[in-house]
Image 1: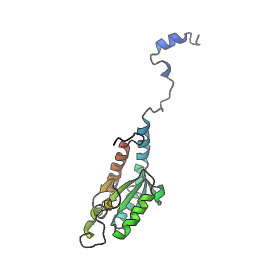
Image 2: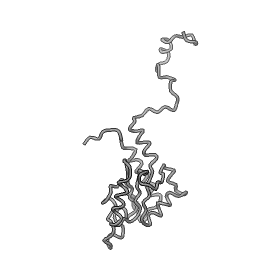
Image 3: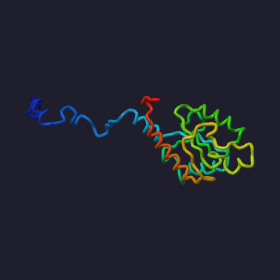
Image 4: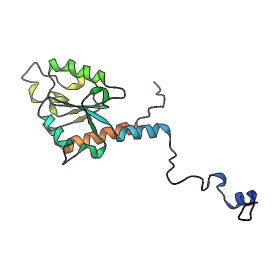
Length: 179
């Protein structure tokens, strides 16, 4: 007999949920583990700054107090071994291409790349008149998001990073991919 004067059978008939009702507080989350991992990875990517030209100034402005990339969870890192996202901002020359690839390979998986500006996406205004400029960083490393502009505004970079976060959120890290 319960202190309220009812037995277990009467209690379970009265409460339709049975054992689950009033057992959990409001802070319990029931979700697929794949989705929780993707959410965690998408809301706190660490980015590796790789600025080679004028786009780097706009990238610094996006990280400064007016736009503040930390508001969307982006945390700057100086080492590729600690970063999830590489932001390639500016002109990439043929000589620099090998170094970009080496830095990309030093990043831990999963890794993402944002090509920022006309020079990083397509060679910009320099590739027509110079043999030394790479016609887009996607020749050397795979790019996930392209941010257009010469140089792109900080708002454009933030929009590109939000698109990258959406891509990461849609991934399923634990689900086996069928070929």
